[in-house]
Image (cartoon, rainbow, N blue to C red):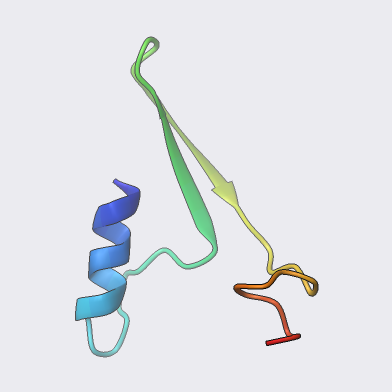
Length: 51
């Protein structure tokens, strides 16, 4: 699911319905999805403001 969101982000021009700053995890044993909202970290080498 996370890779599908990445493909949507890369291929959608106006970035509609793309879940930005959100992590989706699947618990395969319980067959349940969890969604986590993530915030940018200032000291992150990928998304931080120090880039």
